Length: 299
Length: 185
Image: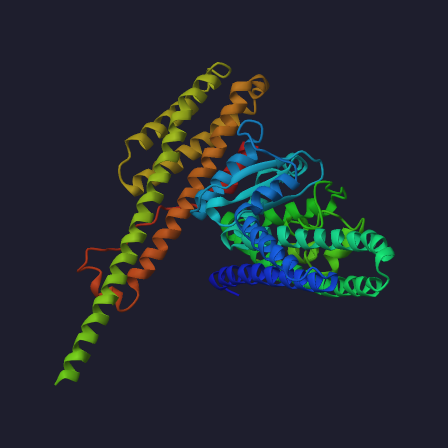
């Protein structure tokens, strides 16, 4: 996969995901409306809701992700290395310097987001900033800049918000159906069967779509490509290789990460400790670090 | 008759489009090269501006290291006076070498190494070294794109006529960035 074809496929995938999301929500609204006897009114609500959340995810996905991660803006004096390294690598890549944010957490991690290089953000934890030296940090930031340049960040920000929305909706509907269902029971015995049917449908539709969306967004190749183009920028693959080694050794879990944002980070933020880790592994959001280090050292 | 006229117009249009895209492509690359060059200039100037401060600070602790100071000062004025690409590159390398020596000497003066001002200047200078190196890298990559475009056939037949010629690289010593770092840390 060449760089320009990678960019093109990311841009296309972003639109495919946004359209899929709208279609999915509208369909869900239609089924629910019919089953609960509200007619098409729920469907029209769903149209409005899904179109708005798609647009929000496209234009404000980066701000939402930042809020979710509890990040603060970086300061040139306090975060000198992050600030200057990002500045320098942007010069080398011939792109505008992204906005920089810091998460106050001792776990080591970093990610980039934003819909294009003009609206890009790089976020790093204080843990990664304090434990990497300048060359290693350059490797990490160059990797993130490559994600921005390849439009990976656009795709991932959209996915983070939309997948988060679907997961949240599923949760809400299931609760609603469960508790609301019991109450409705007394009025009408027949609706019980219908409600269980809907629960089934919701579950059946949501899970594979969620999985496909995440798989689309987080292919292993994307990470390898960012590693290689990052190394091209610093002309020093060893920096990123060493950084990945340190990240691999760090066993701390990043509290600010959620299921929806996990695939954004440079390494899996859950570190094999809970459901999130299983989830991330199952859908290959992160290629094995040993493999990435080996490839970098072979360059 | 009419048909040959149409074909003729088509051919002329195609040739016109070729020149149009060749010319615009080269102009936009040339603009990028100029921007990249001014970026290097900004960083070189920033580095030159930091040096008098550094020399004063170091002199306060290591007065008798006269040769190093004069080397740094000489390299700095050579850089400020340099006009052409190659003389700037040369002076910049000279300054990098002289600064490396200065920082190596600083290692022998624990009080200097603990000086708040010195630590700050060292950080800023090593960052500026990085900036010079990275802006060089960007400049050279744009020049490379431009030169390749010029050399390709059939572009190579017409670029003289349109006033484009190959650009010179900013002689970059790729090893320099890493080796300088070692003496800084």
